[in-house]
Length: 559
Image (cartoon, rainbow, N blue to C red; front, side):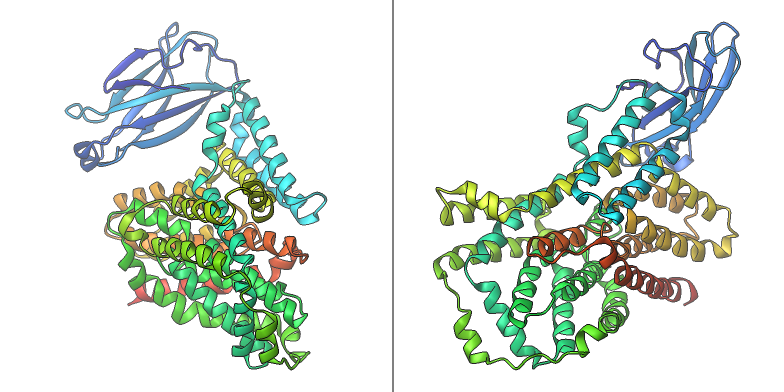
């Protein structure tokens, strides 16, 4: 609902939009947008909202909002259960500021919800659990599971809001269009490159570099993927690396899935190292002025490349040791291979390769131009198709784009955002913040680093880390503002980054790169199921988060 603008003090306004008579068990959802106010922020001023019965002239409930931010508009939500006397009488809302000499301006809406809304977090959690069960059992395709899951979540949202649900426009805004646009554009570019022979050409060169060792080949592929993911985003990296890997394994006549899983795990780890490597890092970097590209290099990159990367390589090789050591790589005639797999469409390679080079270059320069990578990928893709398929766009769209993967992402984004609107992510964040604030001052930083990192990792393993990171940003900002001497904002940001990014390795649905890789592999005839990914992914996640936790404590607490 659209809020009513006001400023303290504000009495007797109809924030209920005429619906001011209640029934027992209903829930009043208060949504406030507080305008930035530097003076109010510095003085810790807040707003008290009263629900006032006009016939009995009694205050039925109170709720506190604030303080406002000094630069940006704050979005705050709270719920009030209608368990007071005489709920059927007319009600108004009175709003008072905590400081008489400080005026706080805001927009407030009060929306009445059904009694089910009091248990909205539980409903959201149960929906997510059932979605994961169906994906795990593989009764139907995971794309259908995500779409049906999002529809069920919207149905419960509809019931909670007593028949008023989100518009199609609002639902479309739930989609992460930047991610979908990046995937769509890079799928077209990679599809054009695949018709030139470049992937087979690269696969042959990698086989030569492996010198007949499966272990050396695994280490080489995973290391290259991790390094590339630090400077590209990990989705783009896997879109480029996965086809090469599958073609290489086709030449060797071996299963590509161990290599693909190892690569995507290292891709998520490598992407954690820089500001542009993973979407949560981009959100963190854009949310805090104190944090920039160089800060990630100085604070996060050593943890990733000195500690997490070597350990993860050893773990991946150990997990797949039987696959890598029980059979020897057959002797290959490299000269014959190079003749068998040449570049067979050089004009197309020049066009698609040039476009891809400039797209990747612009990705590298993201800290300079700050333009959305989706626009860059889409522009590069359509320019390429204009030269390579000027009269057969339909064929390019049909053969290059993995529509089931894009639809799965769309369903998952809506599902997570609706569950977030039910308060699931807010509950996780607020519970975390309350526990940290209750700790003794000398232990707060240790507890904050550990909890933020592990809660972020576990949540990101099962929920999309993009909305989770966006939810946690204001929470860690408030924690730092309230306890500036013990909880530096930069340290909390590093803990959030490491947890949210490394947590993506926990399950197949934890990171966008995982889903993209599974889609590419499945379309080539090698299905990566939820269980295929779970054991190596969860093991690598737990170990790397533990290493990062020790690194953070040693660097920022114990030294």
